[in-house]
Length: 238
Image 1 (tube, rainbow, N blue to C red):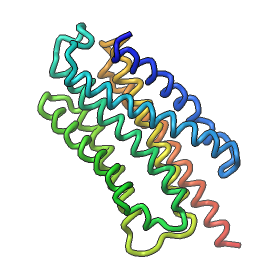
Image 2 (tube, one colour; image 1 turned 60 degrees about the vertical axis):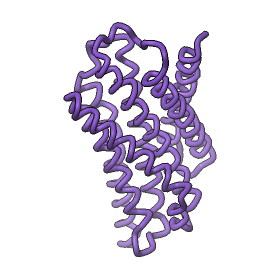
Image 3 (tube, rainbow, N blue to C red; image 1 turned 180 degrees about the vertical axis):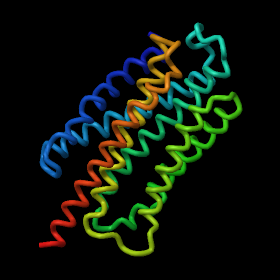
Image 4 (cartoon, one colour; image 1 turned 90 degrees about the vertical axis):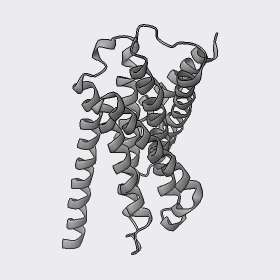
């Protein structure tokens, strides 16, 4: 088996682990043992899948073989299977890393300013900017839109990390939730867009495919935020 096909098999195994485990922490009681167990499984599965996606993207861009001959537009191929796959892989890793780290440093969020965490965020932003630039160059607005979401998400994380006033003791919970939902959005988007072209290439730019994971993820974030606000107001009233 060639290296690329081996990476695909490992990527699918790791990705399926993450895609299945992702729903565990959502449906289990927050902070409980099962919640933590499912959450770690989802994060580590997605991080491995993201790293393998980066490796496959580099092989697609610089490997000696021509991947997926049915895609005759090689500029489009480099965009989807090269720069966008590389960016989505790094974005998934970035979300997972932040989701775990913000809990680890819940009592000391200043620790997230360490170069070890900042370099991960920087890698995501740089890859997003190039993905957006490449999409603009070949006339693919969806690549630009996906890249913009990553830049905005990393910016929101940085606002939390570099805020001048100390956050409330429970502020990390919202950051943790948003990061892991973002991780799910990026992973499902990669699976449904980049992966789908292998079976039904004519649907690769179907807006519903791209919008679906974001709609579900944003709905979860809004629902969580409203629930947290009601709980906080109830505590303040009592």
